[in-house]
Amino acid sequence: MKISSIKGFADILPGEVEVWQRVESTARRVLSAYNFAEIRIPIVEKTELFRRSIGETTDIVEKEMYTFEDREARGGDDSAGSRLTLRPEGTAGVVRAYVEAELYKIEPVRKLYYMGPMFRRERPQKGRTRQFHQVGAEVLGRSDPFIDAEILLLLSDFFSALDLNEPALQINSLGCSECRPQYRQKLLGFLKQKEDSLCANCRRRIERNPLRALDCKEAACIRATQDAPSILDSLCAACRDHFAIVQRLLRESQIRFALNSRMVRGLDYYCRTTFEWTTSQLGSQSAVAAGGRYDGLVEQLGGPSIPGVGFAMGMERITMLLRLKETVPDAGPSLYIVWLGDKARDWAFSTMHGLRRAGLRVEMEGDARSIKSQMRRADKLKALSVLIVGDNELSQGTAALRDMASKQQRQVALGDLAIELGARKAD
Ligand code: HAM
Image (cartoon, rainbow, N blue to C red):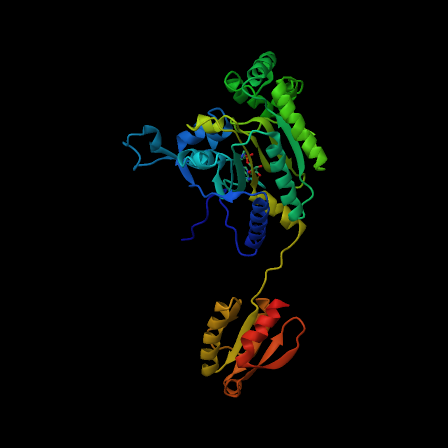
């Protein structure tokens, strides 16, 4: 019986995976230039971690998490530990690890990045899957606006390094514990007047989380909140200054951006600067990277009062953009050994092993086949060169080396093969 994969969970097959590898290695290079170190965190965490950090009244926590009861944890001293969740994002886990390992004790400022799968039970569509992959980065221990700008410069550099010039940047400030409560009241007052026009979901959580209404994708809610008060008019002096410096630094670095005061993001831990990079090329799932500041999160998760800011980008969306732009030619082996006769096969097998250990990508056939059929296979695999060796050639210590692009063929001494191929590899 054929067993298929789960809806929203995709394979990344050879032919596609090369684009992923390129995105990952570019990300590592740019992150390293910005002095980030990698952190690897578990895929499963206690449900409580996400409830507390992402927020009870967010779509993620209310309906999208893959949560299950863990038999091991049940009956332990931590009842909250009996429910586990596949991580829907990485920030909560990184902050949990930072607090748990007391990383702040040695050096409070930490720049950490991660990459890997995340899980959200959303309706799958183009650019949206239930298992998706993020490259994310978090800076803990810095509250200055320069680091917010640095994060945005990093993303801009990353897009340029991949030759993706299209993503557009939108930024907002969500204020702080000083000024947001006042804005919240103001917005609540406005929404109360429009309550009848809001969707059931927004009506339900209007008291607990009125800002969510600004993020709602329902046409009725978008219409009803069109004239909602802007948070940017309610910022306190400190938040206003912080945001002004971020904008100045972006302008001075020639990073184009637009202000979007309705952008509240889908997670509750944010304060001050938030941002999204979007593209017009992927339909409704337009955000390729997003993030912002979360100054209260470390403390909320049991650590000292240490600020944080970070981002995550969606690998599926970035690789889709790259695939729209280019087809990556899949590289073939540097050498394909075509053999004829038992002695030649044994020789080819051990020579292949030696060349592979020297770092070359080499392939050969295992079953006896005609030279023509082996050549056809070498062609199909896009081998750069082919060595043709029979028992006779072997006894003479030479074989024909064919360059598949130029179709030039020449005799080479078998003893010099590694040097011949090494020289080819270097040029
Ligand atoms: P987020 O906006 O929920 O933020 O996700 C960041 C990015 O992940 C999105 O912009 C999108 O590219 C990608 N993404 C999210 N959901 C899906 C999905 N179902 N399918 C494909 N791609 C998806 C966060 O996750 C925050 N942790 C970002 C952050 C880090 N903020 C501060 N530090």
